[in-house]
Length: 157
Length: 353
Image (cartoon, rainbow over all chains, first blue to last red; front, side, top):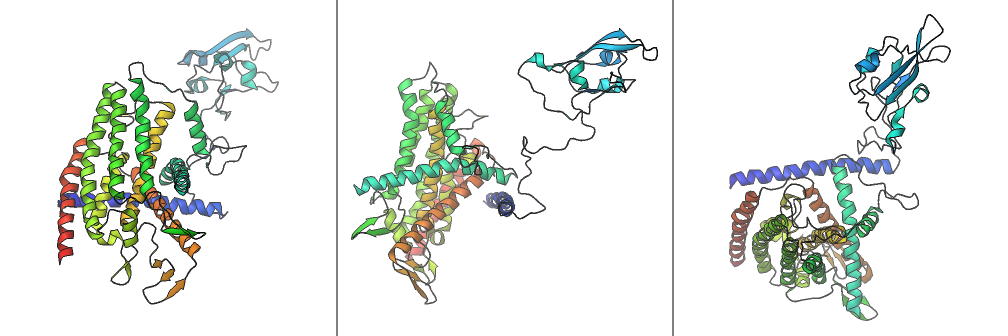
């Protein structure tokens, strides 16, 4: 009986906690409704498509190929990213570059984003700092898988 | 003629409140959990904090496929949601919304049917709602729903006992089963200043009644009949509008329980110290009011109290986890029923002194 009474008190305390949350949050919501700015908000929600959260500086987003001064890709088609890629989603076809300093350039550089797991190994492996994952784009959903195969033009642009 | 008008008004009030309780449930749970809640439903781009959400839900539910499994008993499967809906909807007929209103020389009581056993009528109709549960569980012809239905029936029958016993003390204090009579009695004063509400006369009875009534609504601390995701409940085989009827029944039960609680324990439509001609404060002050204002005060008081108890029940639903089945039965049989018996004896002793 005394044990049951203890439970009863705890039950009431529990509902007081939720009631406190309700009252406090409701007060902030009402203040906002009347246009009064407060430091705290009634909800922690970020209303996504309209409001966006800033990405962290080390966030791995869509790949980006860096270019030289002439607009050509920095990539020298060394195949290191292709080798390290755990989901085997990068395809590079090398071609000879007339410039003896560069020697090779990628004729095709294709990333299949439907397979990419965004591990960032390609960025770490690259000796030329030619690929980075800092474009800040995180919304690239498509209706067909074909559209997720990104080629050189899309990656540079 | 007037009865039909009253039925229409009461049903509009009841169903609108039901519709918006679904919205309130979502919003209140969101505010409790530091979220915002449903606010996207819009008409022509206007979204008033999600007030159109119930309509969007209703449209979705109407156009969903109304699927009945091939192995179910078709007629009973269709009948079950209507049974549970009907027996809840009918209880509103005995609830007094206010005292009376004088219109063009006629006195109209703000209650659809002033039955002299109104309290028993409501309790009986609420218990008949069990048939909806058992029917749906059995007619689906699925073992899990059948077990869910039986669980529901066992729970409701157990708590029906405590529900009935907890009211006996109240009936002893206000010697009447007529809800309008009980409401009328609560307008008097206790010790000259305290309104003679049921909560002051029967605090223990109120607690037992409220717990048992919560169990009757089959919502979360007591939602073993449903147990949507973990223990499969009685309306698993329902979809579309029939499922919606079960859902609406739940929300209607919240309103009915709120109405019952305030009618029996919180003075129904009574505002403290408000008589039919104005306020008579205990200090001797008076504030005379015209008849129409008194009626507005009474109906507003009724509505505010109902809203508060709906709010409280949703708060409870979003605070507590579900009972285990043996805990549920222990609470019902070993705690609430003995306590309600103690309450009856105690009331009798106090009354005889």
